[in-house]
Image 1: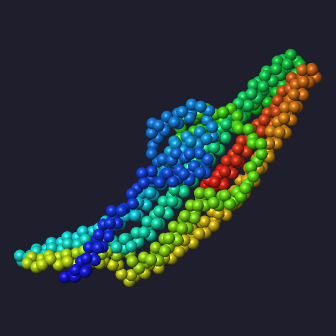
Image 2: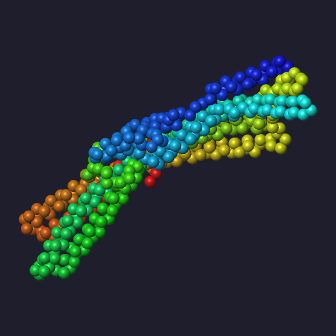
Image 3: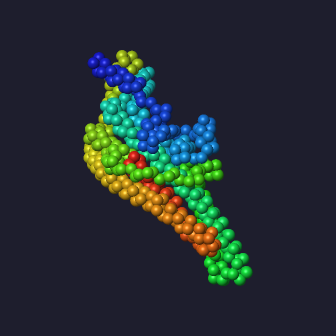
Length: 453
């Protein structure tokens, strides 16, 4: 029969377990999205409304309001964060991790045993209640590990939100530039159409050679092809932007006619590499992985010999005999598995996490250097087109027009100059587009989840 001391100890263990169960962690209502939203907002320069729930009426109304006016980079990013199904899928995964974290803060349910044996006029009844003492002892460590995994998942979700914001800005820039190029291609086609018609009439009157008339016709045919390609590129860019925004159709988008003007000066790096190491979400996530692996290694060392350790209260009663109270313990003996393989795996996993953190830091520093070099180069090229090439071409066009007005140049010289000017304008639009994309990539390299094409 169990002593009163043992009985009191068993009851104390039972009360402790019940108290722990009463303080179980709960699943956060936001699924951990609020922390991810704060991380993302700090890196994209605007609020990040993140939720794994489907868009409700208020969200749909806000999206429609934003679509009723010319789209800006900031409004495009907000629509994407509110409406992107791909991002909501990532946030749902974060919600599952939050649920796993809450589960890790809970003990295994207690076990209740009951046995009844009857024979020869006697009845034996066995009753028992068992609790997972090993789980209780390791609960703080397991909860800490799960919390770090949740933080890692929040960093990953924030990284996907930041990446979506950068992708949306790049898509907006590409769509506006493509629409601008398509509009200019339409103007070139109209000019080529007029030139081809004039050349055909002069050819019929005998004032133009077959060769010159064929050249004008070839330019017109080339202009038709270029306009068709430019129109398709503009449509493809709009569709890509619409997909990122989570929209079913791209014809609801109202884009501005031109890209923003170039800034007056290029921004200085100002410890760009250090900023990347401190703020890039992929680097922070790699650090969290290393911390989680280190904590896992400590827990593995502590529990290498114990896989199952249950203890509980038990009593037994028989007909005509007083009830007997006591306790029972179930312990798995390490006869064949001493936990060495689990420890070795945990140590290898920790080394892997450390090396991945080092690789992430090296990649971040390299990417930010490359992004800044691309940013400066793109600015210099775009500024050169803006300050030198386009004004020079305009001056030449003005001179040709003056000569044409003074009857010193033919209409076909005027058209030929327009053809040359077309190339410069297209290249200027592309250079301006490349600069704004490079600026977005620099921000991603410093504050986001790394640069991606």
